[in-house]
Structure formats: structure tokens, C-alpha cells
Image: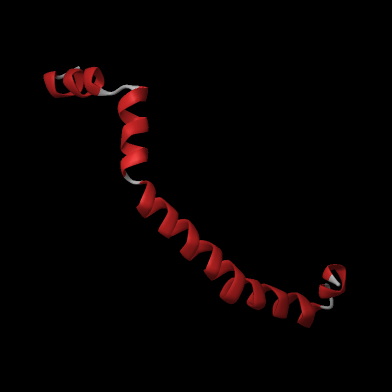
Amino acid sequence: MSDDGQTAAARWSVKSELRAVARDKPLLLVLAAILCLYCAFIAGPIVYAVLAINGIADFFK
């Protein structure tokens, strides 16, 4: 293993990863909200329309 790989492995820890997630929490929340809105207003109706065309949408009523 090279020196760079050894120092990177030595710096990695669960604590440092949790700090990184906590630091990025606002960004993660915004991305999760965008994904939820996309699924609710764009992907969901498209999937429902495809299922309705195929006659499978009755399952969701």
C-alpha cells in the first residue's frame, strides 16, 4: 500500500464520517425533499398513467 493510501486509511473513522454527514445534513434534507416532490408530482402520475393504460391501476383504488 502506498503512503497516501495508508494515511487516508488512518484518517478514516466512523466518528469522522458521522461528522461529515452532520455537516452535510441541510444538503441531504434538501435533496430528500426534492426527491419526494419529484416522486409525488412527476414520477407518480406517470407511473399511474402507464398502469391505467395497461389496466393494472385498479389495484390502487
